[in-house]
Image (cartoon, rainbow, N blue to C red; front, side, top):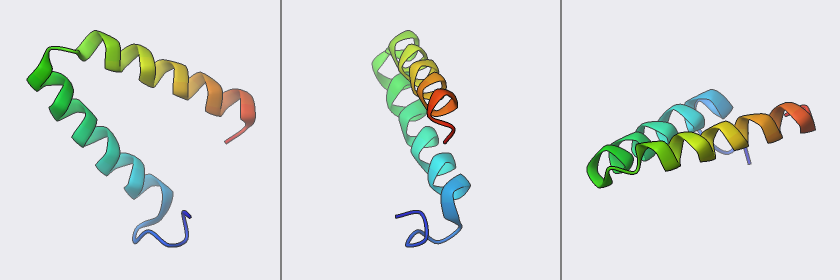
Length: 49
């Protein structure tokens, strides 16, 4: 999957998190999004992603 996206893995993450941040600000769900993001980061660290 990461080979199919122009710019690779980091580019995908940058775009994804910018969209998530905009939605979070618009819906006042920043705390929820941050906790989800933190959980995803922990999961990636544990998996060695």
